View 1: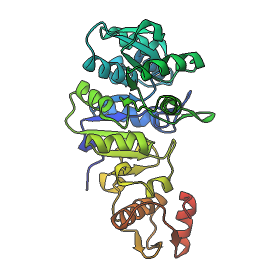
View 2 (view 1 turned 180 degrees about the horizontal axis):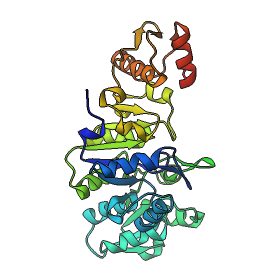
View 3 (view 1 turned 135 degrees about the vertical axis):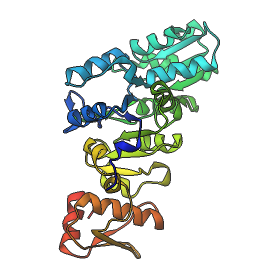
Length: 332
């Protein structure tokens, strides 16, 4: 019998928003799933593109939700953004911060000097999500970027999942500055490598697994970093999104939630499934045999379609079991 997915890895990188929690609520089964990771002796790194909070605030939030967490286990895009700046700039360089006090602190902690105005002659701009930003903050950044300042974005997530639904993310505000400056930023967070590389290095991991809900950040980041990934269906992206994903955003495994970490590796892998038969014609036709569940159908569909093509596809169930699975997955 094959081991679990977790058995193959020595560090698990967990996205937060949409994977572990949604705003102030834990995702179902997150608590017991993460506790089992710790019990197995596998290291955990909470890897978040949210740059608005200091790492201790993230720890406090996780503890408040009932999880055991330490500062060493948290890697934020604010830390990654500041690290990118420190690699490119001499100590004492002035950096215009478009973001939270937490982002300012990360910049200052690495020997740079955070400022808030173009008149302070910044040589770089760093941008992260903060709900108190004003038009004036973006005006100052626009002037600095147009004057030649290095522009680093902590992340480029267009949306942020919360208990209220999807809200504008830092990527939406990056687009504002991109439109105003005709420039593109260096991105530190997922899907770029700095944040993930930093997290793996801090854990001393050799066999990491990235776990997340977003194809364009979590899964694409894993692909760029050359590490396997598990997509969970508790956040932004849907089964159809996964089926129609471009090669750069394709997960290796998929599960409903974090319980997939403890499932047999062969059962969560995107591959042919013994209970489902999939044929590819002018569209994609699914026929069922046995009593497989809908996630097995999704894994089989992805394996078949990714081998044949990519992008939008018509999916047809050819018997009652298949049609029921497609309805449950909302890809009929």
